[in-house]
Image (cartoon, rainbow, N blue to C red; front, side, top):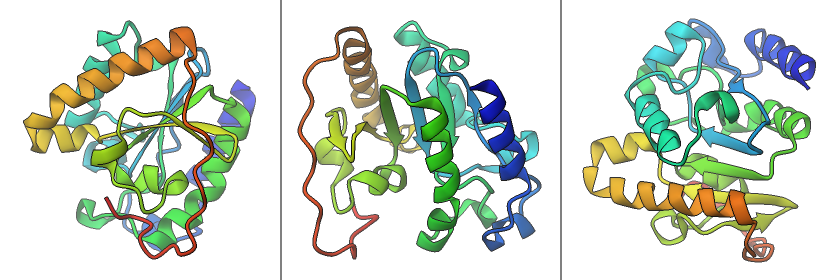
Length: 202
């Protein structure tokens, strides 16, 4: 598995499938292991991630590390990546075409890791499996979609901007710990919406 992930990382760093590579310093493939069976999928690299080539190493990453520690985990036991692997200019939101171009790497990492659960951090990651949903409504509630157990959460950056969200994130991580320990029942496959116009709503 480590060889497969390393090969994917090399491909990501060389990727030119969308224009983001032109303004980014480097690709950020993701890092970690399959030990815990958890894959965290965020939005996009920011300034610090672009400089270091590692995901979640800025302020949002520090909060993520704290939340992981709160349930007895650290980042070496999970795998962390983003739906877009080059930094968007000025940290703007990733565009649908950019997410689509990066989907091949998400698919390859999922196939290599075969995680028990994918924790989506923020609405852009959630939109891959649950388009049109509101993150404020479904956060902390795992669902099975296309054979993948998806556990939607707020993005740590959102909790930094709005501290009132932090208790919800702490509670969601506690629920995640219970899920990993006991594997409770989750909601069934979500129905496919007829239209994709609200892919990033919520």
